[in-house]
Length: 114
Ligand code: 5GP
Ligand code: ZN
Image (tube, rainbow, N blue to C red):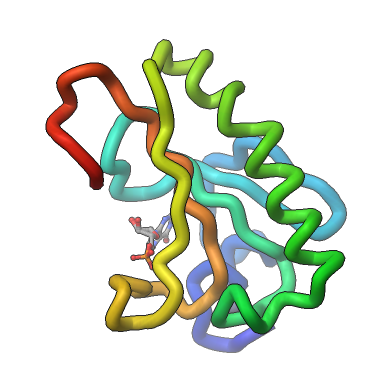
């Protein structure tokens, strides 16, 4: 837990979020400012800033949820595909310093990468 981390506050229930799925170590919720309908974030419940900071078992737990959820999100919003990605570091566009994987549903003709 990091005191001033938005995503830690979501994990602790201090900030509301629309949870998509949850395991012991991982939670997925809808992005508050979605790039597309169904835009979902998958995070480890423990606070780590960078992908490389994650212990291997936690990294595996996150990607297990990502792999399971990506096709389900696509189906739910009738998307044609999905962009799955991580902004790792401020220069890459990481605004929240708690590792998170974006699942962004994509639609034919939606105009390119988010
Ligand atoms: P980043 O730019 O760090 O890769 O992505 C951060 C994402 O977190 C953005 O897509 C942003 O919309 C989302 N976000 C920021 N604050 C909140 C929040 O309080 N709740 C939710 N659900 N998403 C948030
Ligand atoms: Zn955090």
